Length: 310
Image 1 (cartoon, rainbow, N blue to C red):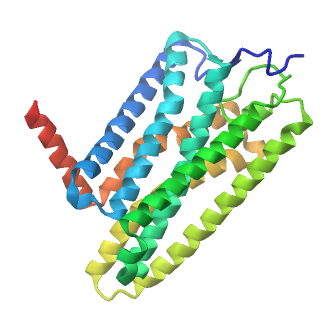
Image 2 (cartoon, helix red, strand yellow; image 1 turned 90 degrees about the vertical axis):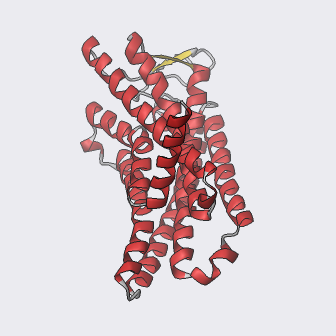
Image 3 (tube, helix red, strand yellow; image 1 turned 60 degrees about the vertical axis):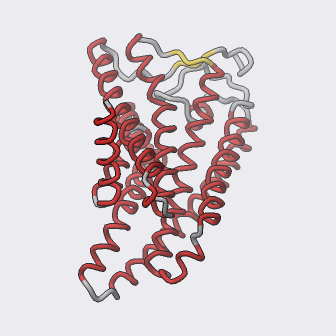
């Protein structure tokens, strides 16, 4: 019997058993992470450097790009290191740090997506009040509230999870540190505290989901009343990327944690965890820029400017 005080490291789930597959996974993760880093960095730089993009919509687009960068940098580097060097170890402190930042960035992403939904709602349903409801100060306060809430949530979950005594070994059934896997190692009834925190988080998520659904019902009702086809196109080009990102984020994460136990298998669980923790940060910039001509033009100008400087 061991407890958390005697555990110096955890063993993460290996992505593959053979050396060839380990190197293949390393190359795949390297490609995805480089794509995510490049795409999100371009969006952040384009929004920051283009004065005509200093609007609430692009300000709220910049913040999820920051959380996507943080998310990809939290889980992927350690997984790449383990695949390359054929190891599974992560230190106790490293695991706690990784869990904190993962919960922090994934929480910030969801809160920011909810705020972006409010931006879309106001711009389409209450355009005359847009400048009043979404001034620069209001935008800064909403973004700060999202980041602060995510930080507090991550801090509480991390502190509580790693205060539990652990007596079921140190092997985690995931390629990064996450709360459900660490709770499986706990032998204390005090994990009801963590379950209570999870219940509070679930209630917050459910409240955000209700807000998103209600907002989009109002948005689509307003769009259907627009007489011109050009107005329809502009409204949908604004809303569809956000709706696609929200759907991808929610569907993958919810299916990962809420799927029936009968559907669980190591390979499926691993694929789903990659799908919700690694793929979205690389895919989101593509979704956002696909139908946004202003953003694409700003990114293109930025790339051309960097090219000519060389």
